[in-house]
Length: 240
Ligand SMILES: [Zn+2]
Image (tube, rainbow, N blue to C red; front, side, top):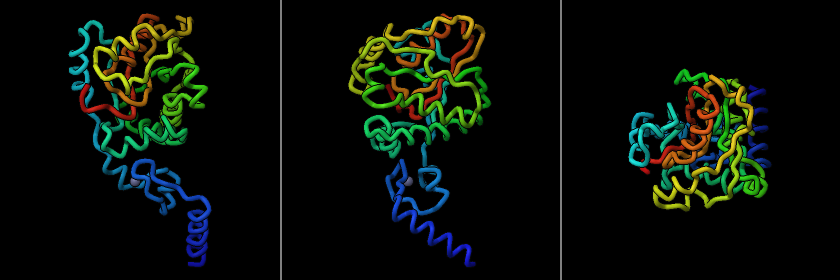
């Protein structure tokens, strides 16, 4: 009894001096487990399911031929649109410098990957341009990948791919065709072909919209000997 009162006093004091907010709804977190997780359990319970991999593949066929599709399974933590709380979480780590949120969501994504029984040889984050990384202080896809790595314990190779051109953010490029053009040939791969030979790779990114970025990276990995590339993202948009 005394112990529980002491705990409550300590928790209340922590809330006072170090308030924590849910990364989805931004409400203040009081429950100790929620504070450790970084989100309220009701937000997690109400996280909408992401579109299934087969549906996303069908969407890709609107933009490219089946021969050009380099990605295999596509796993999303949730569906993404501007009206959902996931938008707040993604905005936090992309534009407010809160890298912890990317890691937190990576942990959730890691659990989802375990459920799908996907066990790749490597986890590789989709790179951002070095100038953008300096400006932001981190690559958000790498922070997500670290969370995934914590759960599935597969080697993470942060610098396998490089982005060589500074392009407009995909979120500001409106047409699908422009998005595919925007990312054509902008990635490089470290030249260790033996590293990828016959390996399966899990490519990690924040949001899957047209798939142009991830398909481009996956294609490069296949050209360098990888036998299969799966994609894991936090959000998959409802449509292209
Ligand atoms: Zn919440």
